[in-house]
Image 1 (cartoon, one colour):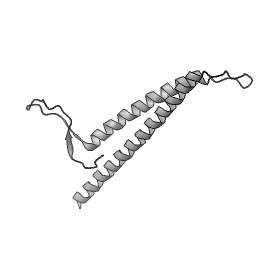
Image 2: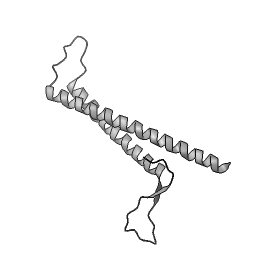
Image 3: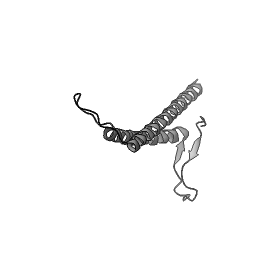
Image 4: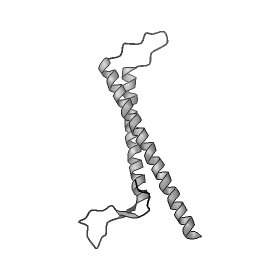
Length: 113
């Protein structure tokens, strides 16, 4: 992803000239992507925890654990992989946002000097 602070047109190409489309900076777009990635991660985390409680229910220490269903265990594993992959993507986006903020601050400092 480019780290240039140039503005990007986020509106439709058929917009009214009297009402120009909003202009979003690269940082705004990246923050929007980060918000979306965080929402997806949260949804996957909830789904994973719900499925885990079904596949691996908590039992008292003196009780025997039930034998997990193979298909449910595979589904739990797939959800875990999706969650980990999504969390990794989220971290990468967070790094890009941090780098973009750093570059914008550097540019402001240079312009102030």
